[in-house]
Length: 223
Image 1 (cartoon, rainbow, N blue to C red):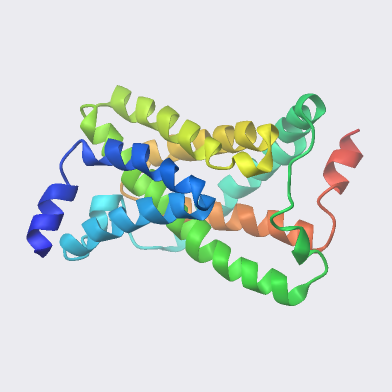
Image 2 (cartoon, rainbow, N blue to C red; image 1 turned 60 degrees about the vertical axis):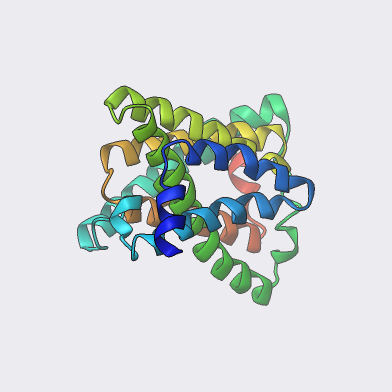
């Protein structure tokens, strides 16, 4: 049974089918879209006897990766928080942060959401969107440099739309952020953990600013 499931789910077209079917679960709950795709990815991982390298996790976390992730995170913070996001908000309005508003000044809520974020956003989303969707699409399209770039764009659009609950400004900002991250994965195809750290550190900064109720200071300073 395990072998049959694995052989079926690793057929080239299954990644596209998964991406098409997953949004249907959004009519029930937007989180189901994520967990459906993640479930398929983990079934493949299970069927491969936990061959993590199939999802781009061929390198362990080391000092070099950690330092690199910090540098990129800081660059992302400067590029998006100080340049890109203020421009987007000027024309499209503010982000809809209602899904995390309750952590403002709430230490217990802040700690809880940080744990959830590192498990399901930093690790889970990178494992699914980059490790499975992007890598799977790139291989389906021929596994060339062009196919990886096309896959990066497609996956980033998909990732951006999945954040529609943040409003149009959120969709566009997340698309651009995801595209940058996908291009980094394109250059580090065997080091998905680098992206996990960047994603986790970036979200940690954002959530901490919201918890401290300081998330508006950057845009106010620019204006």
